[in-house]
Structures are given as C-alpha cells and as structure tokens.
Length: 149
Image 1 (spheres, rainbow, N blue to C red):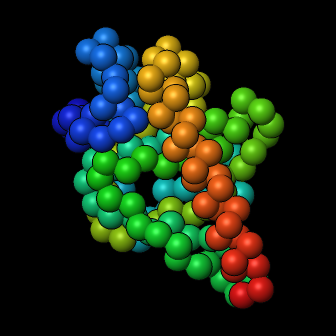
Image 2: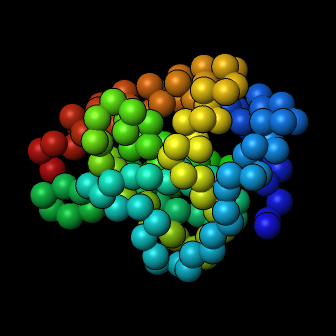
C-alpha cells in the first residue's frame, strides 16, 4: 500500500489519533488510474470517497453546452464525500465529474467506512461537516452562476 501520510498532513484528517489513522489504513485500498480516466461521474450513485495521493484531477459540472471545468484537485484533496454523506439523508447522486489530468494514485474508502470514521472521531466529524457544508454552499453558488451557460 502507498504511504498515506500525505492525507494526515492537512485537516480534517490531521486530527486523527494513532488509532484513527490505523482505522483509516485498514479501510482503504489504493487504486491507480490512468490520465484521462473518469473516477466519478456526475449523476451516478456514490459509494466511495477518494483521497488523492499522487497526480491531478479536474472537477467538471454538466451543463447544457457540455462539461464545464470548475476546479482542480491535488494531493491530499479528497472527493466523493458529498454523495457518500448525503446517502445518510437520501439517495443522492454524484454532484460532479472527476477526470484524471495525469496518472493518479488514490486511497479509496467505502462510504459506510467513511461515515464510521467520521462518527467515531468527533474532531474529524466537526471538520468534515464544515468542509461538507462549505462545499455544498460553493457548489450551489456555482450552479446559480452558470445556470445560463
């Protein structure tokens, strides 16, 4: 397995204790994906959260005129948590598409394990909740800005 230490270098996962990091390591698998491949597709069911270890990805939103790039992801960014966390509330689908701009290595964690990790570590849950709410707000604002494209 690849070194996961980069994930713990930044909030919210820098708040994990040694046992929390152990749980994390036991519940992820490392994946490799080639340049140009789609890791997640907007509108699909989300059951995995990804933690970028190496490489760069582009985040795109579907618009009537085609995919619109809205941001880039770099290690130790994570993505896929919106659909994974929203599964607790309703059957929410992926809110964006993520495509590899380079060859990518990532740690992949099933949504149920991610929810257990967050709920077992209150500091992490608080930080993930803030990150989640900020990302939802930014996505809503962006969708409003691009609705007439």
